[in-house]
Image 1 (cartoon, rainbow, N blue to C red):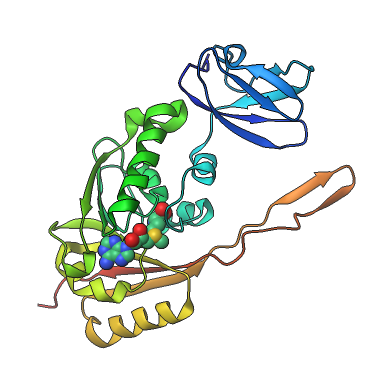
Image 2: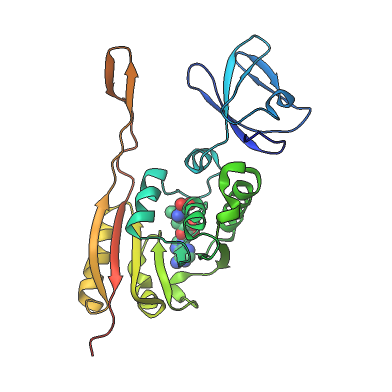
Length: 270
Ligand SMILES: C[S@@+](CC[C@H](N)C(=O)[O-])C[C@H]1O[C@@H](n2cnc3c(N)ncnc32)[C@H](O)[C@@H]1O
C-alpha cells in the first residue's frame, strides 16, 4: 500500500473537480472555500483516499503525475505542454540508456520527462544560456525528483546542466538524440552535424511555421547529405465531458502550441 508521507507534494480534488496542490508539513493546515483540513489528517493515508474538511467536504488525495506537476510548477520560460512532450518522447525515440542533449532547458518540463525515459543507464545533457532559467529549472527538477513520491526517482537518468549557448558549439559527441527548443535551431545545425551519431535523431520544437520553413530550407540547401527529414507534426488533444446524456467535447482546449520537426543523421557517402 502506497501511503502519503510528510514532505510530499499532493493534489487534492474537491467535488467540483477543483484541484489544489499542497506540500505536506506536519502541524500545518490547508484552508479552501469548504473549510480547513490539517496536513496530519492527510499524512499516512493511502494514495487515492478521501479525506474530509472540518465542514465534512470530501477531498480526493492523489500523488501528482508528471503532467500535473508541470502544470503547477514555476515557469520562467514558455514550457512544452505535456501533450507535445508525450509525442516528442516517441517521435525522438527516447530509449533507456540513451544519451540525449537538449537546448534550452527553460523551465525543465521536457528535461524531467527525458530523465525518466532514459532511465538509470541514460544521460541528459541540458544547455541553457540564461542563468535565471537554469535556476528555475534546477529547482523544479529537484523538487519533482525530491518531493514527489511518484516521480520514479529510482529509475531516472543522470542530468548534466551547462550554462552554454548551443549556437556557439556542442562539446559532447556521439550523441544518440538532440532536442532543440529554441528560436533559431538552424543556427545550431553545424554543431548538431558534428555531435549527433550517425542514425541519431534531431528533433526541433518551434511554434511558428516560418521557423519550420527556415529550418527545412537550411537543411535542404546546406545539409541535404547529412540529414533526412522524417516528418513534421502538430499534436491536437481535445478533452470530452460526460454529464448524464450530454456527451460532448470540452469548450476549451489547448490548440496550437508548436510544430515537431524530426530528422535523422546520415552517415557520409563512401
Ligand atoms: C521555450 S524555452 C524551453 C522550454 C523547455 N523545453 C521546457 O519544456 O521547459 C527556450 C529556452 O531556450 C533557451 N535558449 C535560447 N537560445 C539558446 C541557445 N542558443 N543556447 C542555449 N539555450 C538557449 C532560452 O533561454 C529558454 O530558456
